[in-house]
Length: 117
Image (cartoon, rainbow, N blue to C red; front, side, top):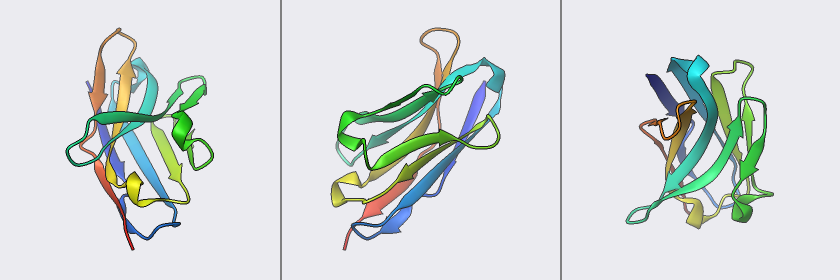
């Protein structure tokens, strides 16, 4: 099992920045991919960004240039840096860890990001 805890969400104004952090614990040696998804009220959970164990990064095309993903100093930590935030970025942001066993993945509880003036 892998446990994920997100932090860093909050309420900000358009144009502001936020950094979300996800810390994994448990069987982290079995995790090869960590990433972020987001879900707006009434919407589906959408891919935001992910980073593999060896550092390969993928970011949703619509978010490139504003969002970046990186690993923290500890391999069990992943950060999502969000800049130039817009009201449409308002959502619950979830961390996800993909296990080496295909189809097996874990979710955190989410952290809320609200962008409004």
